Length: 232
Image 1 (spheres, helix red, strand yellow):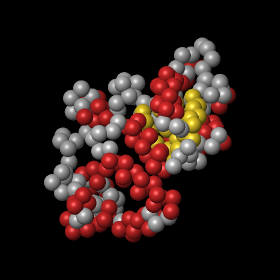
Image 2: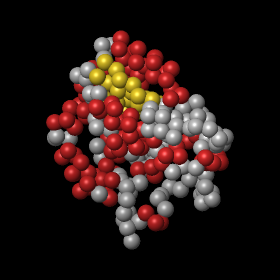
Image 3: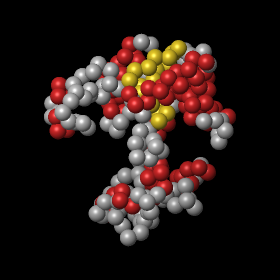
Image 4: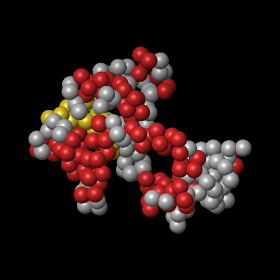
């Protein structure tokens, strides 16, 4: 069967041949190595670019050295040291200022300079970009627009070599990544309902959070991509 798009999510746990270097031989029809080896080859060539090569090397070393030992914060510290970064930036939600304060102290204790910018910087009224009062979280009063574009611009302008995202809202984080000038990573992905642990919704999708499913929920998980994913 020929497929138009990669669909790694459907790969059985008994296959996952890329882990053994056997994707071309054992990968399912929807494996990227079968669907689009040309794009894979073009991407592979990019690892020969000096900056990309350096990041790939250092991140792989951090992964190996800290595997199941280091917290994400420790990984950020070690990666930044291996990359030779001196100045780090934190783009945090206004609700995460206390966490940003703790993170700043930890990073400074390792010798880094740290710049932090909260999402509400600039105190732009939401109405200024066209939102109505009824579209605010709490209508009837001033509500500042989240300003991830300025977060990205300020961190770049003030010389940050590596950006750490701390709890930005969905979409706001997207704008930050779009406008960020340097490398960025996520320390916290916001999920107000799940204590900022969004993977719990996936782990519990068939029990406590079955409300996640839409009207086209299959009777049971399919073993292959839907027919619309085939080439023809």
